[in-house]
Image (cartoon, rainbow, N blue to C red):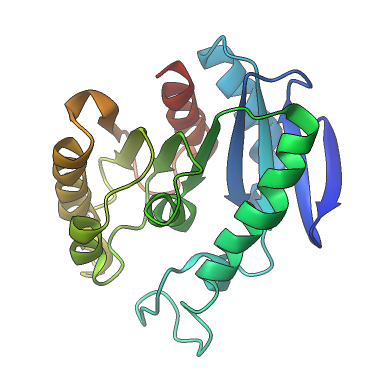
Length: 224
């Protein structure tokens, strides 16, 4: 880790090079802190592009990242009401500070699970991100495919991945993730072009090799 600091009242951690060629941004839950160093090391092994990985520690993973309410994810009254706040933080606080430190470098936004869903959603709201790294994104959230049909990403490239066992679960809402991700990939091929997106099937369920999946997602975007 290069540094831990407060930016706009949130704890952020920087990993990688102090002279990067690109900026990676990732929302993170507290339980992921122990694997962030490993993730950064794996990214460095997979790409020759120097980078800085900026992670944002969130107060509440679901409340901060859900783009809209879905009772299958959370029944809290505030769920789905603060995704826009998180995006505004990234755009108005985090990115200006990172650009001040490192210059006007291309930005790749990525995340795992709900973080991957948030990255896809955010890329449809702003053209600030050059690419999106969405590892095992929670595209099973209700109404995702209708949203994706109407709102193409403004990024140049999108990486999608999913564990090959993730759709084989008893929860019928979560089991939609496989078909929804296939549809998301089809839409991206139409919206961005086949050369600008990829869908990778990883081995295992949702909790297998999270940091490795994210590292491969970021590295593909960097090499793109």
